[in-house]
Amino acid sequence: MSSTELIPPEAARWAARAGLPLPDDRHVAVAVTADHIHSVVAVLRELDFGNTPPAGAFRAQEGKRDAAV
Image (cartoon, rainbow, N blue to C red):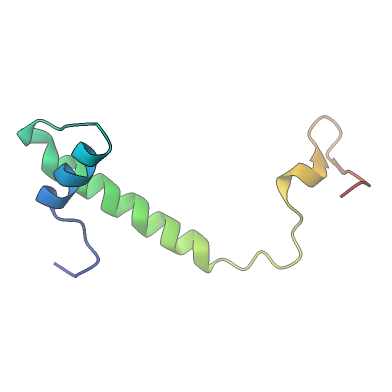
């Protein structure tokens, strides 16, 4: 296990700190899910969006960029 992976006891401790105590049988599942989310977010952080404007710059109905942004 790498040092960046969340271990089940740590997942349980973090959940408890957030006010969400976990039953013992959920520690592993929560740790695995958190690791998966972390890996997806890490990939997203590496993407180069270049000059892509933020989503708020578009009007959904027309698909056009708002001139104010």
